Image 1 (cartoon, rainbow, N blue to C red):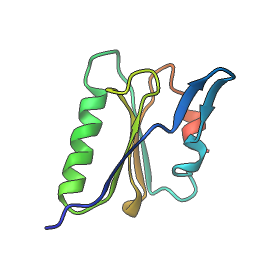
Image 2: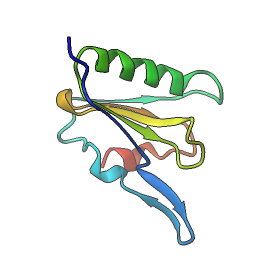
Image 3: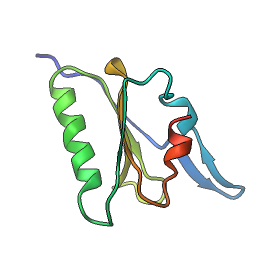
Image 4: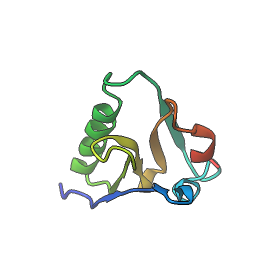
Length: 102
């Protein structure tokens, strides 16, 4: 099976004028089939879990979008599989899950 495309991005960023976000444009609640918020303390494996899900879905031929944390590019804020309209998002503070899903 052919792998899907992979896209890495920062959907938000810390600027001199404060935090700027594109999260509202990723996947709205109205169009999503599933939005899964993952919560847990630092180092419990949220990013690793989302990365593994993304890798598996990509190996099955789906396009995958990785949303990297603007404060730590090795950490993921989310993974989106556009074709099936599913998002896995870090729902742990300081992430605001309300703004993800609007």
